[in-house]
Amino acid sequence: MARRPTQKQLYERLLARYSKELADAFFAAIREAASGVSFRQLVAAIDSGNAARVAQVLALDEAALFPVADALRNAFVAGGASVAEIVPRGARFGFDGRHPRAEAWVAEQAGTMIQNITDDTLPAVRAAVLDGIERGRSSDAVARDIVGRVDRVTGRRRGGIIGLHGGLEPPNAEYPSGRVNGQVGSSLRARAELEDLDSNYFNRKLRDRRFDKMVQRSIDNGEPLSKTDIDRITGRYNDRMLKYRGDMIARTEAHGALSSGQHEGFQQAIDSGKIKSASKAWVHNSANQDEREDHVSLSMAPAIPFDQAFVLPDGTRMQYAHDPAGGAKHNIFCRCTTRYQVEV
Figure 1: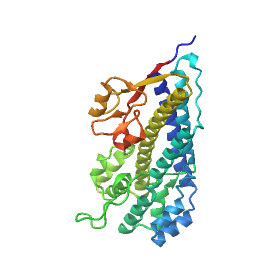
Figure 2: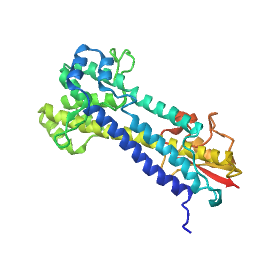
Figure 3: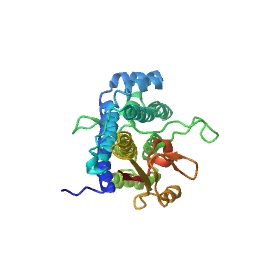
Figure 4: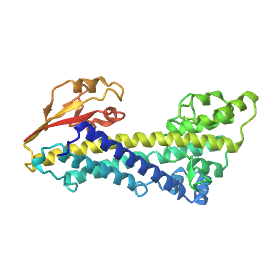
């Protein structure tokens, strides 16, 4: 009889698979949204000065992001189904992905994920349009900054700000018109640095270093970079920021879906009488994440009954690692897991 993988091995295998599936779905959705935009309508919307109309033309909405939501559901179901590999063989557990609790979790979390992604669209295009106006860029150029420029090899648009996060902060004394923040702000400031031959550009960790010699030579000689080169360099910087964001979203959402699916799977196994009960322990993955003292303290505590919550020092109650109830504070960049012990 084949030896079963450990819970850690099982979880890491699923995490690798579904993180990639979610990331691929995210990148494909952004790519399709950018390539499907009517450039004429986009330029007209920018000419109108109506940022909401610009966002509408981009159509980065629930329909465009459905593949991402579908990938999230796949990860949740895979997490639930993995319980069959943890409970004793004689339990013969089968996960019900259509259970009302399961359907409710997928609907709520997929909706939240999509809303978080799309909520950045309007602030991002508003920031890009305002920056374009202030720097005297044409509507055509701003449109290409937003959706990217056509790659001669693939025929697809790439290098735009669509899919990046960020927008305008409220005006203040230092920035009367409002400062652009997040990745969108980084993109716009990188373009300005290249136009102004500002060496601060080299402080950008996600820049494409293949262009460094070209940029340094222009700075040393005081010769402006061509518009084409600036577009290309900024575009590759945007691509790298988009990949960073997509990978972060995918890993965070995959962790949440797999962990939530496993918890639902154990609940179903208990409800159906396949197992009598279970206990659970918080496992801190110290080798691959920043130290969170509150998570470390949980991992040092004894296991608790399945129906009890983990209580963090700040009062947050979580049923398992990556429980959405923990919010961004306890889930972003977290790589903790939950280990279950079954009682038959």
